[in-house]
Image (cartoon, rainbow, N blue to C red; front, side, top):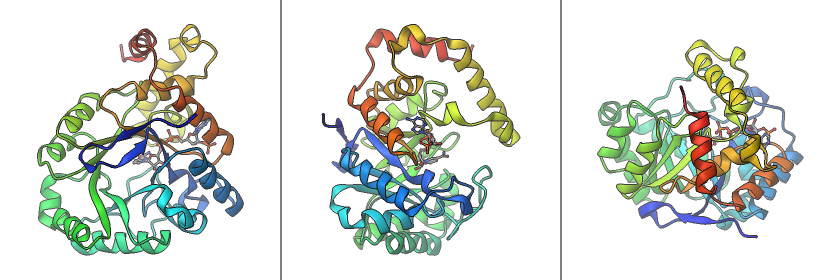
Amino acid sequence: MRLPTAKLGRTGLQASRLGYGAMEMRGPQAWGKPISDDQARTVLNTVLDSGVNLIDTSPDYGDAEEHIGRWISHRRDEFLLASKCGCPLAAVGDPRTVPPHVYTKANVRACVEQSLRRMRTDHLDILMVHMSPSVAVMQAEDTISEMQALQDQGAIRFTGMSGNLPHLPEHIAIGVFDVFLFPYSALDRSHEELISAAAAAGAGTIAHGSVARPLLAPPEAMPEPVRRPLADRHARLAAANLDDLADGASTMELLLRFILTHQDLHSLIVGSTQVTHVQANVAAAQKGPLPMDVYDALRDRLSPR
Ligand SMILES: NC(=O)c1ccc[n+]([C@@H]2O[C@H](COP(=O)([O-])OP(=O)(O)OC[C@H]3O[C@@H](n4cnc5c(N)ncnc54)[C@H](OP(=O)(O)O)[C@@H]3O)[C@@H](O)[C@H]2O)c1
């Protein structure tokens, strides 16, 4: 069965509704899980063999871009490649804290040049600003005009924003970004209406943080600003008792298909270091949106009280 696809707004790019997030490939030097070359090669090729054609990465994700370059650059015409800018080059920081990001023209260009070199390609399909700076910061640094210069030069095809509140409404309002990446899950729907606003403005919409992260992150290991909301999501999920809705499916599958039911959301990215998990996620995505009664019940049971 083929994976369903959707048009990423005005870009016209046809993306699989399930994409792959390469952050999981960052490796231990960037506080990730150990991943061997063989495992990275097998996972990335399984992703493509399964019909996933959207890969999201970042200069921030440790070894991820190198793995993409080494193991699937020979299949470059089979996938859309999204990376980020504003990141510290060769970042190996602790992802539980926000590393300092710099949105100068020089750093935007340096990020892209490094990404192209690491991933052995001559273009990115989407270049997103990372970490959601304000429009004022981007204006002061001329960030967007440098992205547009890179577009004119053919190094990137479309611009985007990996954003979140509070700055996302102004990112959408300025009307320059072709694609938005939102945090969005059944347990945190705070960006739900902004997804629709971005789609109505003609942009492509992608979600992350949707599926496994809310289940796996151990709240006590996280720093205080994120520990409390995560603990709250765990508690809501534990109390929800979804067995009657699941009909034999895993909670992961329910959460993934919940995202696919948002009518203005074009794709969601999930990361994994395990072939079996990639295959399970693809199988869930192939089932498409949830029946509306299941969607409504899931939304109501997982909403904050
Ligand atoms: N988190 C952020 O702040 C952020 C920001 C912007 C963009 N992104 C992008 O979004 C992508 C996704 O990140 P995310 O934060 O949304 O995390 P996620 O993809 O929801 O969760 C990844 C975790 O889920 C596990 N997993 C995946 N499929 C599974 C399955 N079927 N069964 C059990 N476990 C499974 C993975 O472990 P295994 O390795 O064991 O499968 C991994 O630990 C990133 O890779 C990145 O490209 C993330």
